[in-house]
Image (tube, rainbow, N blue to C red; front, side, top):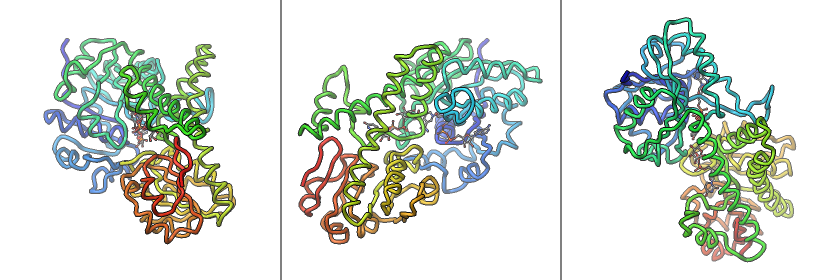
Length: 455
Ligand code: NAD
Ligand code: UGA
């Protein structure tokens, strides 16, 4: 039977649920979209002028859709929206388990299971339940089992429709995705979801697969991306000791059409809420199925990332400890154009420096200082302060660390900054964003990841 999706509910108003539903509402004005979240402060923020997520272009999409065919409501008011929905997206967090079987590696499906129970309780008629969150392969079995306990006389299809957006470019990625992936067992349900995307995504970019392939493809995609960053970071360390330049090497690699130019930027390590958790989830799945060598292979990608952050922090700490033990950290977000600092390399590096007794002067143009301060561990009472301007943060600093590639760091006036920093200050550029010519004209030595020290 042909199905049509005209009414959508989405559980989870986070970095994925909010922007994704906003773009669906924007591109499908005939579809009514309701986003539900347990976190009432977050819902209030989505309904305010200060959205809880910073993404270029998001404000405009929300302005066009909110109050028209998009609304954000708290979970306690969500039952009717789920009952009315032809399709319910599950877009809640799937963090790494902290206890029980698989703790430290496996994905915690507790939030997803709670959504499935909520849908089972409130859905009416036929409902297409869509996995938007990243799930371990065969998670749909768990969802189906819970839906089967529904006290209502509803029926369900379960689809996997993982999200590939990257933060900082979420709206662009959603509006012009490389591909939309829909995994499912019932062609009518797959077609109904494909019809929604077809309002703006070309047919050839909508990939249909089985459920398990869709679930696994998402984990594999993130693992491949993380693996590229770890590969170039492994090469970056070799560049620093041999005189090779990582950007030149990356350019050579990237012009091979089989390799391609993207995701070859050496860095202080990857961050973000997903690469680590999805890699660990993959490692756990391999171990669960007795695949020891594949598990070790994917684990090594994460291990290399930890090593990259540690060696950078060690270098900066060694320099700062020879001087006045004051370090300025420019950039706390895990990448530019987002306020998100989940798993940001800046967290581990700051904590390493605090443990080394170094005082920190922190600056980021989007990250909330109170929230960032809450994840720092300052057992040695070395102390940390936040500044809104880079020029203030570097005052009296013995080392200046650049940990996010915000555009403003490419054009810093190093001559001016050199007059307020401590004598003997050194720049540690973890993002190859600092202008080495301007820094060296100001007499500042720079250590750049993948290049090494230059005076
Ligand atoms: P998030 O933490 O920003 O948002 C999740 C939201 O779900 C929170 O607001 C939370 O309050 C809400 N929630 C949790 N349980 C709930 C429940 N039972 N009922 C109602 N609301 C509930 O997470 P996110 O970054 O949006 O990620 C969501 C999923 O999407 C994860 O599986 C993640 O791996 C995946 N993903 C994230 C990104 C990204 O860029 N952040 C990209 C692709 C995929
Ligand atoms: C990543 C994927 O790119 C998305 O496709 C995926 O949907 C998402 O994870 C997810 O599942 O959450 P995201 O983490 O938002 O998106 O951002 P990326 O652009 O992938 O960057 C991740 C980290 O790798 C950042 O810290 C970034 O600075 C770093 N990175 C990226 C590098 O160090 N070098 C590169 O060449 C690219």
